[in-house]
Image 1 (cartoon, rainbow, N blue to C red):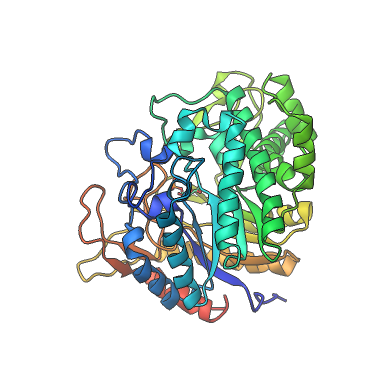
Image 2 (cartoon, rainbow, N blue to C red):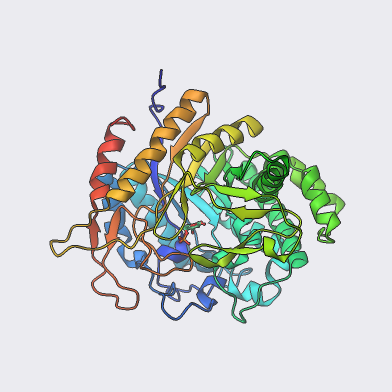
Length: 465
Ligand code: BGP
């Protein structure tokens, strides 16, 4: 028999600062790396985004009417400490105080991401995550957040999708000069982020003893293309390198053996100081936040350059690695309009694996379907595909709970339309439509989609429809 969703289950929704707020240079904010990226000519940049900065009261009211118990958003470092390190910008603090107070007025639990892809550009110019000084800058920034918001915020997330940032750097946009760092540099940056994350978790526990903090990675299961043992090893290779390596370091406080040997074999091992090992060991996350969109299917490497292929519908993300694995098609699943595999059962499987491995409560901080939603003449949006997608995933979440997984909340991406990471404004995820075009900003009106009314009913029924 099915177990019900817990009474205090956090039915929520998700956004990130740079994709939602706009006001990219207002009230003391400085540019972040995402503001400086070269955007493809046919898609919107992040300067105005959904203009949440000037609509936050209206937006929170809509979230409240939707019935949200929780709202996951990120704070922009560049609003709080515009130079990355140094003076704190009171106007930046005020914006998030106002936002959080507004949420609390409606009993919506704020879930705050410390860092969602938006490194201050000034720090990037000084070497960014390649420099150990960025660790100190990050820790100082998080200290300001814990001191200012520690009494109001119970749930904190460290760094959003460190794994996609490092493994598919194209996933967060194209750097100014169009060139991505080499792998050795990326793994050094990755190491610095691990240390920054571990220090932030420790600091959170010291400064806010009642708060909870955890990593927020993009986690998914890998299927072997066939029952050929070589395919099984390749699927395990990639699942470990892409997912478990990041969670093991964040949660168990150490690089796992396969990850280390992978890095060593290729001359990619970062410089790890003795003190780093202690910092990693001492960090104790309280829960795991996980973003889940789709599964991947993996075949054995052919040992040549043909292992590397661009993912369908997304030319910027390369999949496959020579000698490690290659991407394969899964004939048993559907895909979204943007070529992302739709696999609700994969969510149940992934939740089981994460829970078995770490035994910590899990919060889903992203899951959703990007689609070119159309606004009808009568101001409606019929996004039945979104209702189907979310409802199938919720069914599998309940099965995972029945399996024994401790799932504490669900924050689909995104609660309202935001700018996609690199596919502009045509690709929408929200329950609320924002009336803007790619470049024509229109009136920015918020319009409830069909899925809004469906999700509202579902939350009222605590997931039972
Ligand atoms: C995740 C990111 C989000 C979000 C989402 C959808 O990887 O954490 O910021 O945008 O993916 O991706 P996209 O906007 O590219 O469709």
